[in-house]
Length: 319
Image 1 (spheres, rainbow, N blue to C red):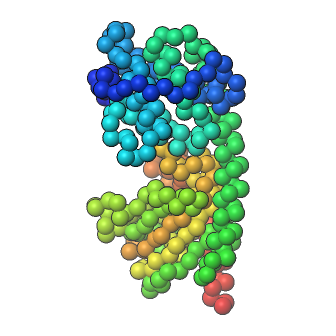
Image 2 (tube, rainbow, N blue to C red):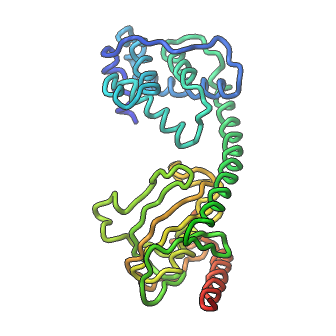
């Protein structure tokens, strides 16, 4: 992070001026939050740039253009203006991870430039911190509901797909290839190959194919992964390939995944091959060393999941 921001001051003189829109008054909550976001970034730039920011050696028009070009230009147009591009990339990453598409990018940049140019700010930075906190909480609440509704609709659509089956918990799966032999249980350690996608966008967020060291598969204890995986893998035999459509409550829930790759209440799609499995250890009790937080399951969840799996197995045998 420090290298990225310091690079702004080294290469700033390479860009040329390109003004975006600016405002004299912040009308909406989106604008206020955007400006507060920008002023916060501006303070970071000032702090890391040190003495250079206080001199005339920085061409702020050029710095501003670099940031704006990255946020507005297509992929091919992003090869130059390395300074502001990197700041723009950071802004874009936050916007994408937090699903803040409604933020005004021009006003974010205005907030940055007002700080580094020592202009009078439209809102104080103290007020900006409060605005951002309230805005983030409000946006999270909206996303939780929006994504939950969208995910539920997508899962219902997948239930109608050819060959699709649904368990009592709501997990939807399609058998692409059956294996043979025994099935893992909740305490098994499985070796799998997989690709995970956001169901609504099809974006791949994780895959063993991307990791040369995981070409033969990776190992997971089934009692320490998301409920959709724990349930789904117990339906499989060695060598089987399944596709799972996992509703939000069997995935990462309202909190989403750490790092922002999976947002709150987003349904997931996994293509999974069960390479092998072995017996493992029971899940540690909450608060004990090795206990999983967030994506692990409680004892009650494990018991309920076992009941659902047993009922599913009995139903399949009766067919």
